[in-house]
Image 1: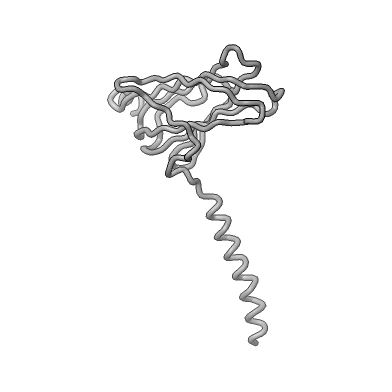
Image 2: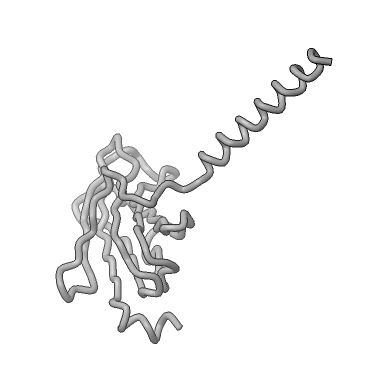
Length: 154
C-alpha cells in the first residue's frame, strides 16, 4: 500500500508543479517599468510628442513606456523616418492588464485607454519584409488630458 501511494503522489506532485510554472509564466509582468524601456515624456500642457528612432540591422524592436489614466483618449501613429533604408512599422501597445493592441503602420492605436497604469509601446520591424538594414521610424503619441477625453470616452 505504501509503495502504491508513493507512485501516485509523485506524478500528482509533478503535475501540480508544472501547472504552477505554467500559471506563473502566463501572467503579464508589466506592473513596473522595464529598465530598458525608453520613457515617453510630455512637457507641461503638451498633448502630443514625436519620437524618432532607428533599429540597427541586428535589432528587431525597441520598447517605450508611459503612464496614463483610464479613459484618457490616445492616438499612436507610426510613419517612416526619412533617410533610412527600411521602416520599423509594427507597433503594439501593451496595457497595464497585459492585453495588447496594435498593427502594422499608420495609426496603430486610437481610442480610450482602458485602465490607469503603466503602458508599454513596442516598435518593431516587420520580420516578413525586412532586408536586415537599418529601420527608422517616427512615432507621434497623442494623449489627451482627462477633461478633453471625457466626451470621447463616454
